[in-house]
Image (cartoon, rainbow, N blue to C red; front, side):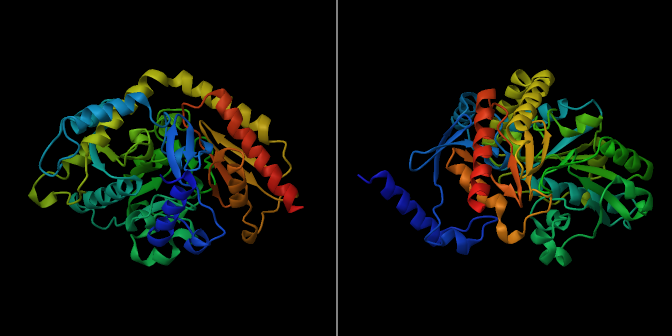
Length: 433
């Protein structure tokens, strides 16, 4: 029988020989001196690697996991669904779980607002659907000249070509810029008076928090001002709540902070509680009706659209959210997390700023005098690697450490995560001296 170490070695040998990891410099990954973690199992907020070491899942498995790993209710929902069917085509066919999930999602918003749901696979495709719908809508309603999309500097909306065109982070998207949609960028709603609204089909934004922009939080009132501008100029508002949805910002949806309802709402990540790939693009009955008739069909869809297993997991997730995370619980968790972050990190000399909203945080590291570190230093990455020694897994965005724990994290577990990060920061800067 193979020992644990032999099993790890075999898995890593196969990985280095055959796998290609996202957002990863593969030369460094495959360097013999690099020792990747092989995650083998999870329970609650904890992950175990193939060597038996235990870690707090500090970025909720890339911002997806809400209720912890191996949650008994989501497990039970999947097990029950498996007894019936795991998947059938949604092209020209319906299925019970998708029908119910669409109804449940629409019920989360005021009547006569978001009433139609288009399912897809992930955040990029949810945004891609909204873009194509917004542009095709204009073609079919007498405004074909509205061919441009308005987006925001430093935005990130996914990696498919349409979504990538909205990306405001040059290192991710610049080489593909000329292949995408016609997109213009602004820094904030303050620039809207200078925008020729008649050119645009839609404007796209991550509400309240820009995730990949080092967890930057928009100014209060900005989203409301954008909604009013869209209403005044008949521009569709697309909200990308792939990261911010399902309680992550302290409200069920980030747009609730400013009582804004979009024309398109893009959901993924936490939709299934972090279990399975599933996405949804919600829109209005008015937009939906512009696609009726043979000549107006929306020709878009994926093989696994409305997959029954994914929908079953999503329904269980919504029930857990309804029962365990009402508004007052989310508010209390947000307050506790904020207090722990401030108490645990704010006094460190290299912590420039702690940006916190709900159950997400960005801890920006800089030189003591406030200057940014050079890219060559790779401080953020070094801190995250060091944190593994203290039982914490997370990732940086440049030199901002993202801490996005599952909603189910207890106060004690949050204290553990922040303490581990504090120790890692201190260790990296002590060794740097």
